[in-house]
Image (cartoon, rainbow, N blue to C red; front, side):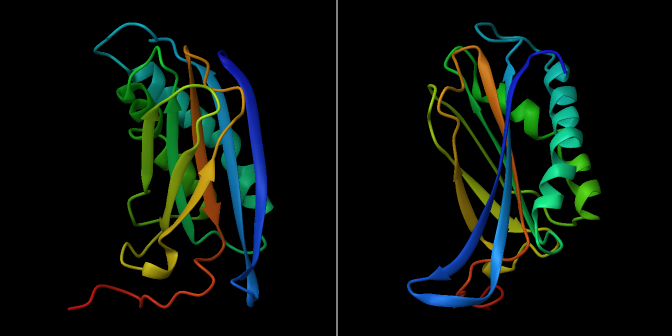
Length: 181
């Protein structure tokens, strides 16, 4: 893929919370891609090149992320950090129009909107990537966050695209399963 500088993946296994050992660890897998921003420094109306880049990154990263989990993916999230020569819309173009399809295909579906976050920031900035249940938007146990970053990215004319999946929700959910009515 032209413009791709770096791929970062990691697997996080959450074993306990405040000293309480989980009955089953929750595994979260993260994929980060550092790409050149073809629109850095200028405003353009047609961002479709970034739509296609987002889809291609989903197709490339998601199979690896699925293999990192211990069980089926039940939650997901996505986001982007745009370098300082870009704008938030550049990150949104990477993650919104076309990235969802390869994410859902890799995990066998998903009815709920994929939670997301985008910001403009300097290299090394952290992004709080929200996670939510893939099918049940009201599953409070799956409202979660994983903080992601790449130490040397995004450079001013780059974008970091982030994807995350998990095979479980928060370890000790005590907030219920849905809205109070």
